[in-house]
Image (cartoon, rainbow, N blue to C red; front, top):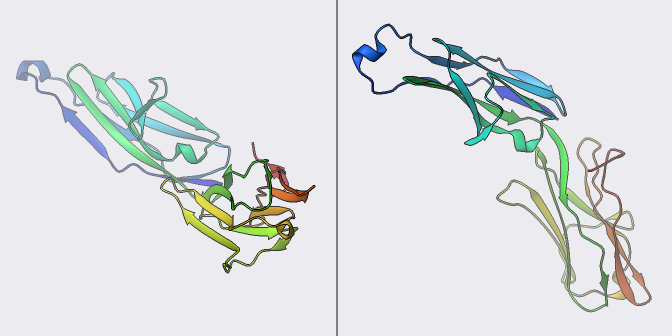
Length: 227
């Protein structure tokens, strides 16, 4: 996974309402996000620097409006993941003056992250069945479904349908729907994400003593395992 750090163009000075005597001889406070465009690998650390001119000031950071950090002029983000993207603001403040600067953290290409897989269950033949998986990534991943290792065609039939969409959170969700479970539908079903040799396995189910048992199997990416 790579991360683009886009230079914060916003550098704003804010003067509070004070008397002329109060500000006479006081150097105006300026805050700048002093870093350049860079690319970081997955799991690495990203450093934001808040450069303050005009004297001593208290510094605080916000990430998408939520306080982060410990009041230092340097903010470090370790092990960058999707949740770290967004707008970072540093505020420099003193009694009579304040300033702020901002920078945006954007994600480049990211390995798929599997957020949901179907769970173990037992089914009698007859009822409808909906299996689904959800994952995120950039560009958005695409699921394929397999039965006993063989690709399931995506064209829908009266018995089976496959749908895929992106939810409001940006996750890609894929459903495999069966209108009614039949004994001949037994087998191992898996959902996979294939993107530059990354593969995520969802799970499978099989027929057993006239029941259909859903089997949970490992979630893997290129030989590794999801946490």
